[in-house]
Image 1 (tube, helix red, strand yellow):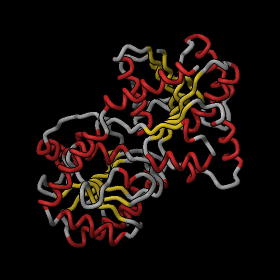
Image 2 (cartoon, rainbow, N blue to C red; image 1 turned 45 degrees about the vertical axis):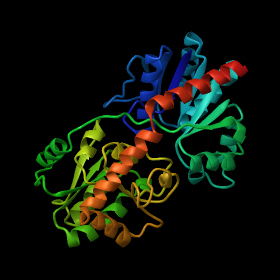
Image 3 (cartoon, rainbow, N blue to C red; image 1 turned 90 degrees about the vertical axis):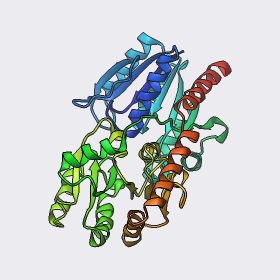
Length: 370
């Protein structure tokens, strides 16, 4: 098959990283794959090995006609069997191209709770309902996000498929990873390391994590919190840490390509998002035997099993969140058990090979039916 994987930007963010991993696996399986980004990427460019990597050099606005024409030309030249849209902007351009190429088959990969981004009677919701009428099939990373999309846009349940994300099994020495992190930021390797990975945006709720962490260091001054990521609220968050005088306990790692190596040196992973689909970073933490403390929003409860693979809280209560972290700090055997369970859970349910087979089956099913 010839498959075009369309992403917003070829950058190291959750949806894009998975699309690159899938593109690499499809290429290795003998398929011809184009890994295409809509918007210009200036640095930290994501590469899908074995695929043809392309940037359409578009700009982020309501509609970029030049971008549309370049995508249209690419479709005309390469004639893909399937175009997979990964993200809302990609859906818009993929469907518009289909109007001029009726033979094109579109798969949309849903990674989030779409209802959180659309109001009940919004114009955006109406437009998206029309766009989805041109989509052959929808895949979703979790059951909650799948049901949410069906309800929000009235999309036929029979045309959806749950395909869990695959997580690469990367092996790192925890002691070496911890020593590397401690040396990088200048604190003793015996300190307790808490990790957060995510774009600096409103929904990732960094301020809540910081407020919760303040409860932790009141009891354990040797706790260290490391933020990995970039984004619009990066400067705002660093300024908050400075105002609170927490520079000795909170560190910013910025962009990092191989986050699993950092996770291998952590004791606990934390997530306080207000909106989530099924967070891949929780699964990556689990692959490194690191338990999570998280708030149950979206599909988080599908990957953080309370009392088994981590601690799952029902509300954004900073005191309760901080106390949950402290309980794991003070109970090493429990932390080890939860981490071990997390790894077993990820390896059993989030295999890369299973994910590849599911997508291949889906693409073949679409082509067979048509």
